[in-house]
Length: 356
Image (cartoon, rainbow, N blue to C red; front, side, top):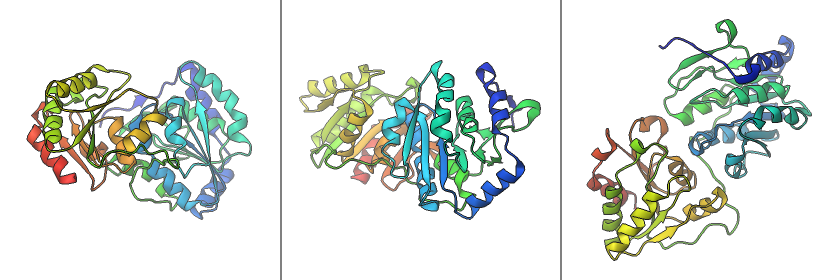
């Protein structure tokens, strides 16, 4: 195991969080006992990581808390970008938005009233791949009687506080599971909470965009170029499926529009009709994806959105392990290659036909 990394939040936030987090042992013990008996009435959940996948793999943990504490008021703190996902969680009663950048820590002070009146029985910091300095400070500022989190994150590297001791989490949950959904469920299971490892996104009445029965989505980008299946492979796969009667729908992205436009243009050059969907905010994008028969994409947030909506997914993976991140569903097939170009179009076509 790698040596401990020192936990160094900016502007002394670690010291402040550690100081605010300490409650009398009697209060902490009483709160833990209430949770283990299923009697908690006010729960705070903190999940500020600003990525779609990181948020969606936490949704089974939210569902587990709701099932265990059906009468509790569950408040979720997350980033502005993720708020459309947070507001689509039936398990959550209230969403508090934390701004990005330099305003974030200053805004924690403004959150004290919103988070701490009345004080939560417990605050759950749902950290999986990294430890959030802001999340720790939000949990501590809330005045929760008990703070739950994980000082081992990512591959299991300890993030140590002063003198190597954990100074914020009263319940420091060890890593056991391999998949990120399991790791986040572990943070709540000690209370007796549990739920199926299925990501969720709720649609509003009449919101789902109607699609042809053979509509297949294609999203050819990802944050890391090394995790992108070759564009020419996307073109060949989409062309084969279109020639077999499928209706390709190409989804653009605001961060890197080139590949999606190139894919749509290449299909047009082959005289194949393909719908092009412009980049849009999440609340517009989600209903567009919900009507698909299947989504073909790289290992990205789009993969998690489709899976959470119950849309079958064929995804391409590299530089990471599908066993940790790929959707856990009978209607999801993750293809892995190192490099990613080693995944053949034949492999992808067989996967699509199997799901359809």
